[in-house]
Image 1 (tube, rainbow, N blue to C red):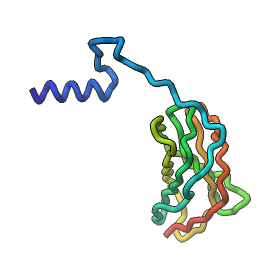
Image 2 (image 1 turned 180 degrees about the vertical axis):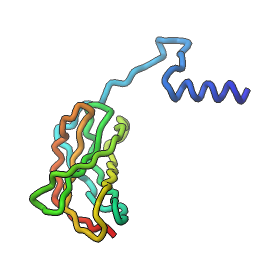
Image 3 (image 1 turned 30 degrees about the horizontal axis):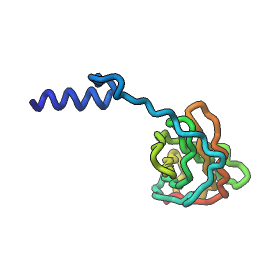
Length: 139
């Protein structure tokens, strides 16, 4: 019995579970792309270490493709944010908001960096989030 439950759990997780009545199976289309994506909270520093930080922010749900990325543009100068870090996220169509968390690593210790955030869909299309420029300092 335990083996059957494990097999069913693995099949469901992989998406290979067969439905006995195909008429009951539903595919949910991606949510409509938001007309304007805006930050509702943050961006803010969630944690800082010598060589890495985690930046977090909350925006309204961008919609569009379920596969999205949070993007942090950063650098040591507020006018040169040419370095980027990104983190994959899967949108929850049932939520009106999305929480993004991006780990930025390979940083110098005891250094102040400038950053701003954005998000994009799986095809690389920006959500055009209008983030202010912020700073963080590594430990």
